[in-house]
Amino acid sequence: MPLMHVLVLGAGLLGVSTAHFLRQLGHEVTVVDRQSAAAAETSFANGGQISVSHAEPWANPGAPWKVLKWLGREDAPLLFRLRADPALWRWGLQFLRECTPGRTRHNIEQIVRLGTYSRSTLQALRAALGLQYDQRTQGILHFYTSLSEFNAAEAPAAQMRALGCERHVISADEAVRIEPALTHARPQLTGATYTSEDESGDAQRFTRALASACAAAGVRFLFNHQVTALRTVGGALDHVEVTDATGRYQRLRADATVLALGSWSPLLAQPLGLRLPIYPAKGYSVTLPVADATAAYQTSLTDDEYKLVFSRFTTPAGPDGQPGEDRLRIAGTAELNGHARDLNPVRCAAIVRRVEQLFPGAGDLSRASYWTGLRPATPSNVPLIGASAVPGLFLNTGHGTLGWTHACGSGKSLARLISGLAPEVDFDFLGRAAGPRVYPAPAAPARTSAVHRQG
Image 1 (cartoon, rainbow, N blue to C red):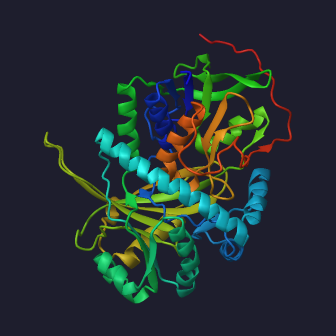
Image 2 (image 1 turned 180 degrees about the vertical axis):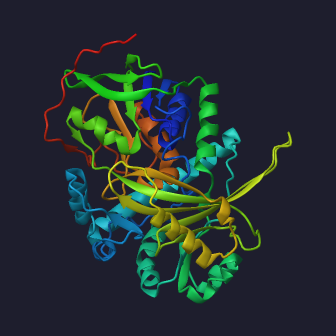
Image 3 (image 1 turned 120 degrees about the horizontal axis):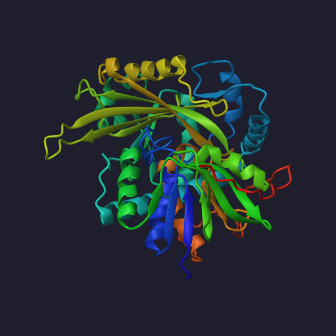
């Protein structure tokens, strides 16, 4: 296996995980990010779940009716904002094509296979490096307050079990036995599913701990560097243009480059003639200090009807007297509205209202912290991992709501593909026999232009 210099664009979960496994295989690795630290954008305050059981894609046979029902509702779990955006309409048409029963079954299969592999990869990595990130290994409980939603969950859960994800259908009473904090909501519950092997943890803490381990192993991080363009020569990637913190333009060259910039990946790929089927799905999260430990949940939860996930992060006090923390993280919903990250107070209030309905008094609402992140969603919910049609450019993007779940498996698999090694999981990797889901853009590929240095 020839050793190479690999550029990784993006220091979120996917970029840092890729960098770690590339370095583990002996490659020289440079990570580039516009922020001043790792996990400063979409990986900053997500829902915290490593949820193989969350494998049913948004695009499923029941989705078109739900989207129509939710149109115009500011607090809708999935909000399609009708706007003059060709990328959104193109993505929406592809989404509808993925809503057939056959496509849904195929996509669940892909998501479960990658998720199961990624979860075991994370567990091995955690043990090897001794990573601590407020992790909990108590499983994930999906609960339902709608009988139709509960009934609709049985077939996907059966398919997941056949694929090795032990997502079991249980009664409402069994759900309360697993998570006593649901006692207050028991009259609303119609049933649940439980996956004991799923986990939760703070994605930002994990990413920054792994980035520190990467740096100690020799990975170079270029923070405060804005990626402005990918440039080709003769159809192959030649260099990456960046602007550093002083405004100076630089060319970065490597033997291979990984595009792991989430929702910004399509904007950089399009001038090369690649149309990545990714659209930003703005997700919200609320973080609440625990106010009443007896009312707060311990198990990570998913409210499928409202498209919300619930995790609890408990950081013990440090040996140097640093105080501990006990926080509730509630995240979810999706707003398709371009790259804007502004907070919509109606959607924030809807999340808090649901928390109080289910777990009254559990969190300190007076100290609520709100956040939004742009999740790079493909119409199928299946990410884009592997070689692009541009030689020298590899993709690790499009993970949507499952970036935390799929990060370690995606990073390890791509590192092996770049190294000429076979991946360890059966998945539709780009550039392999299954064929890519990357479409040619209508514009001709951009020609390489001169790069001017400033200063």
